[in-house]
Length: 316
Ligand SMILES: Nc1nc2c(ncn2[C@@H]2O[C@H](COP(=O)(O)OP(=O)(O)O)[C@@H](O)[C@H]2O)c(=O)[nH]1
Ligand SMILES: [Mg+2]
Image (cartoon, rainbow, N blue to C red; front, side, top):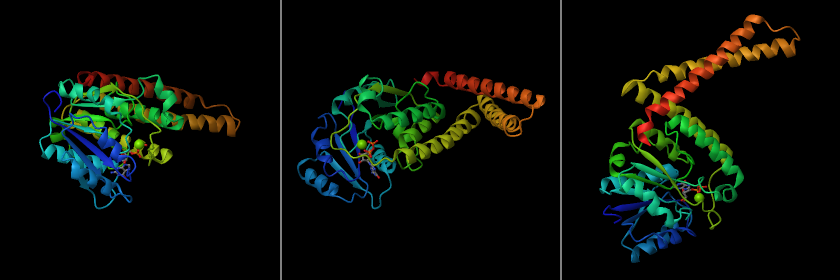
């Protein structure tokens, strides 16, 4: 129990035989249940956890029969937490990259009902740039920006941090079977939370690297897949939030921004074609149209973003 709430730690684990023991050993005492989800590991993860279970009644192991990905493992944990009436569920990786000392800070906003979901943000500290490998820092920055646009949580950064806490209300509302099953899970979930108007808070945490963890992420591949998921989820959020459940003309602003953006791209291509490839004068009407589209596109898009920020102000 933490401040009179039952706490369950959800620990996705895939081939973590060397790491999982440390995660269990260092888990703070106020965590009532440690739910480890083995995603069909090929190593001795299951055996290590089963040994712990002989001594520790607070450890529980759920097993997937086929490997489905970290998002799917988290979904299984969330469903367990929901069905067992846990007050707050927190996700901590099975490789030990979530510092237990940061747990109270992550829990506080949710336990005190200031947020429905809180997540760790490793970028607040000056340490981040030094500790996080450069290519990951770059990928994370790109995805964080795209996640702001897609999710409507404009004040949230470090979108790839998996250290999060969620309350019982959100556990009941979100459809866990629909959530993305791979590494894009935190991004996907943020958009789903926004569609349902849940409050989300960022909490400062320490980046943890070099503790024997081995990442399964292939940065370039993940960057593209997650961007694509974010694009689809963005469209879903626009439809659900601003057309079906409620209404806001910002959808049309975004649509016009996109249309004129595409048009100006084509018109500028045509200008370059005439100018560089044919060596001719630029057709005046083409130049005017290109400029007009470009200006319209930026105006529409920026206003759409501004309206979206306004519409989500209450969810901070
Ligand atoms: N269930 C499951 N967990 C996974 C899978 N891949 C990674 N994980 C777990 O997800 C957590 C984070 O994965 P990791 O590869 O370390 O990602 P990174 O820390 O962001 O580089 C770790 O606890 C892994 O054990 C998978 O395919 N299935
Ligand atoms: Mg890791």
